[in-house]
Image (tube, one colour):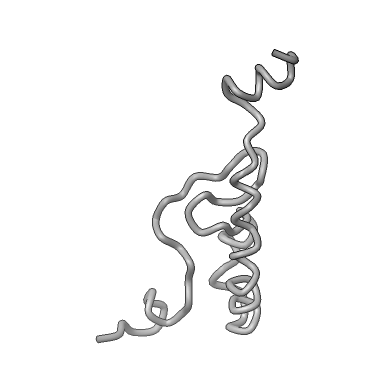
Length: 79
């Protein structure tokens, strides 16, 4: 069953409801979109949304780069 106009069923969304923006990468850790993409999602055309969705798998590596934590501190200090 689909919803009426304006319902979530009317548009494609990669949102998985894990909404945390990774500070260094500048993307949501759940859906991999930028805050601007998330905020403008409903205003984008279906083709624009599909283009962003197609680009998302390539963004996952941005979250894998760790710079902080204990290991990063040890590596930076040469220990």
